[in-house]
Length: 97
Image 1 (tube, helix red, strand yellow):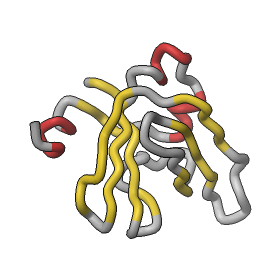
Image 2 (spheres, one colour):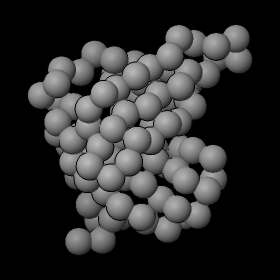
Image 3 (cartoon, one colour):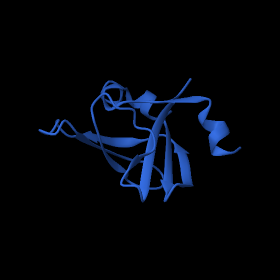
Image 4 (cartoon, one colour):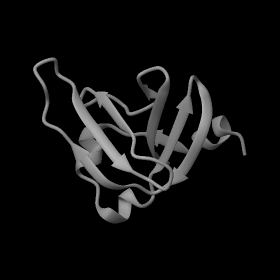
């Protein structure tokens, strides 16, 4: 199944939503990684979630572990974690609809 088709069954989440999730809910999240805009991998389930306090610029660092890597992104607390990163490596976190 193509990634675009797969994402139709999922909704991106925010850091605020991520903070409230149980281990069971984390185990069902879809992580997607893009390298320079091309789909690199996707996997189900994350662990070791860390969310830093909000910085003066309003952004927070969110990182997690999955079967493939340990992504780290900077987002606003209520921003969807949806294809965000440094433009070279971008990530998304999604829950099943």
